[in-house]
Length: 250
Image 1 (cartoon, rainbow, N blue to C red):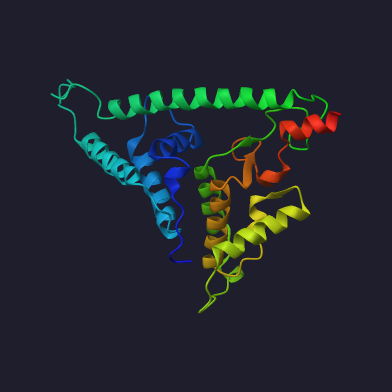
Image 2: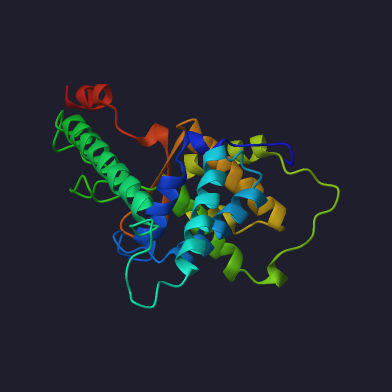
């Protein structure tokens, strides 16, 4: 498993991570606490490094940018309170990029929402257990929400629950097959269910890599009702397709 890599930039980039952190901590995007954000950003990079994720260079550039902004914020202002020669807050450029990117993401999300609504209008009465009579019941989550949930599992798990497995290779491919097999027995499973039988930290890492690879290949969907709510995994095969809904209506 040590040589197995999942390209993170296929999912999302550094701006997505920053927006996730801002939303998670309910921060003001116009007044970002740089020290806090930088600390949390590096914590996520540490998780990515442990998972052996193939991190794009943009993540490291953003880490450098945050560190630079943090250092400039630590420089005391002039005693008279006047602005420095630079003339603007060191965070301004980053803030503008985040706001512009957020507008782009929100617009894309609205388009996806319209597509989902249109898909379901083929047969309004045919609603899956996911929809619960509401097309917004569960929403697909970001990979960083998944990494955050994994971090919580590692933090809360007791060392006594894990046993060291020596000379054993954890196959991500085998984990992928096992996950799909588990999803055949139930239409959906809680994210934490996939880690209950893990006997080592390495095995837990292999399971998460398998989930990320299945997400990349669009073989599973990951949902959450609202922020901080349980995360659910469903096989892509369970998603109703317009052709299947139309057939069910014949």
